[in-house]
Image (cartoon, rainbow, N blue to C red; front, top):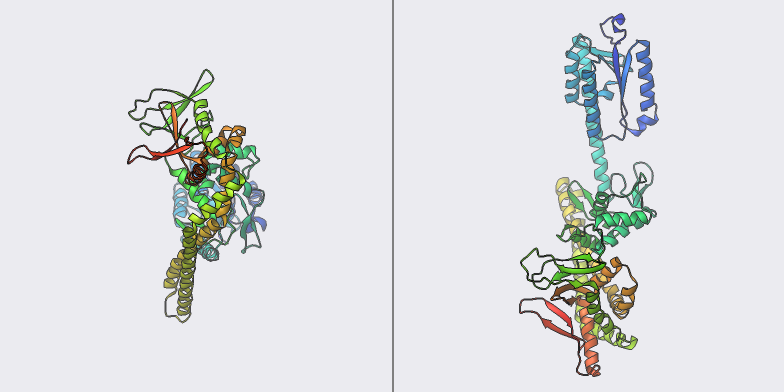
Length: 528
């Protein structure tokens, strides 16, 4: 038993603080809880007539940064309030590294009154502690440091094993939950949270909603953070930047592509959202939801077109960030009326004509379909070649022809390439499976565009316009536009049929003209 060489009677009416800490859930559940430590230390202080000025507690969930912050707050407090006694259960509750132990020792050496009482170890350290007692103090700090280092090493080994199996070794992200026994827990989709994650990506991918508006809409639809709050703008952005949702695992600056968990979204949708997040015209929160917000550019300078309300009427005009002679304002209703001609044009398509257009498109894209089939075949052959290479490397590892380090490097390289190949095959198959479905949807959308447009909100109208037009420009109060490629192809097919049947006689619904030899191709509505 090691005791202080200071007389007990000199300890009367001395100010003290309590420092309690648990470092694992197991400790908290086996009698080492913070409340149990506080109770024991207060009882110890009461028996010695210590005045307990403050209790510092660190829970098992605290990060290393929080632990150090509390530790130095405690040191600042005892210096400021002239506290002489620190009460702690054991040495490893107070410090587990030599740096903090040195800081505590410096405080002890400042005054003969300064003492640290380690109650469960019945060990007291002060300035007059004998040499062999200081040796015990140093040894216990070293043992605590070894325990921390060894624990860290074991945790890292556990993390590596879990990552090798394709599982995220940390707490589940929003949209997922943990299942399984301790040591074998995995992340599966949470049916209550996952729909909000998917909807966040879907909303933002339209480029019609800012991060703030996405958070607001999801909150209105029932999304809550895990503490019951409203998702913030930064929380939504973190969610949209998380590769885990498409099946990868980000870890220490790397993206491990082949997670074993079920993805919530496709890699294609994720990449689309990243493009919107990083581009200059990323959606920003605005008070007014104008119908053509961020959809129109100036036909002269190519700059942005802004909207404003005057006497209840919405006008659009060039923002004049660049040199431009366009001074006129264009009413929103005029822009709409000019675009309605596009919608009316597609309303002439009958179901029979739609089938004929579909057959023509199938014929035109036969070569593209053949190319995709060959691409899938080549990808499969490459994947199988890589798999044979992994098998050979594994046999070499078992025969000790190669080192474990070389095996890990090559295995990682090959599996990463295999993951990219599988992603390409998945994308090609998805495009092939949805090919005709997409065209049928375009046909249906085009034929019902005006009806849909007139019944929708400003956000939904912008979404519809973004599916039909790749570019809208205003010049001299007139609107010109470029159709999205699938819609442009469809328009050509319809026009060819109308020309063959001599519908509208000499009047053309569309003419495809280039503004200049180097300028963009623009589709303009001609009025006869």
